Image (cartoon, rainbow, N blue to C red; front, side, top):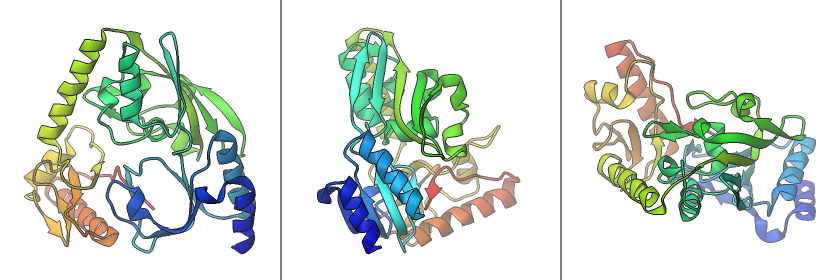
Length: 298
C-alpha cells in the first residue's frame, strides 16, 4: 500500500489523506472501526481522479457524505473512504439551484430560503448531503427529492462523467439507478419555486419542531433504521411486537420512536446488527412482515 499512498499524494494534498481513521468520527451513529484511508478530495477533478486511482489499483472504495445512513463494522474498512466534504459549491440561477454532492441538505435548504425559493423545506432537517439524498431519493413529510430534482451529474462505473435527466435517474422509494448501477453523484440541479422568505422559514421551523417532538435526536442514530413495508409503518410494527426500548448492549430501539435504533453511549456495530436482526425476526414471526434495512452496512 506504500505505492498507493505515494500515488494518492500526487492527486491530493497530504492534509486531505488520513490513515487508519476511526469511522466513528464520521457517522451519525458514532460507531465504526478505522478506515485504512479516509480522503477528502478538494473538488470534483480530484475526486474523479481518486476514484480512478482506486479502480486502477483495485483498492476497495466507498463514498460517504455526512455518514447519516451508515453502519460501519467494528473492524473498520480495509480500503479507501472518499468523503464528499470537498464538493461544496452552491449556485442559483432563477428558480434552479445547482449544488455539489457534499453540500449538507440543511445548508441547501437555508440557501434556498435566503433566495425566497420554496420546495426544500422538507429537507432542512434531514442529516445528510445532497449526493446521498439523490442516491436514496431521500424524503420526509410527504415530499421526496424526485419532486425537485431535474438532473444529476454522475461518475459512472466506467469512470465517465455524464449528466442524467430526472427521468433517467429512475427515482423510487428510497432508491435510484445511481445506487443500482454503482454510480457516484457529483452535482445536481433542483427546480424550485418562488415564495415568501418568511413563509419558507416558518415552514422549516414547523417541521423542525415536529422532528424534535417525535424523533430521538438526543441520541446518535442513523435515522429511520428500516424501510416502510408496503401497507405498514415499520415503527408501529416494532412497537406492536413489544420492542419499544428493547436493547442489545448500548444499542436500543428508541423509546421515543420505534422506527429508530439509537446508540445509548457505547454501542458497537455488532450490537446494532444483532438488535436489527432480532427486531426483523420478531416482526416476521408475529406479523409475517419482512422489514428491510434502510441503513447501509459497510
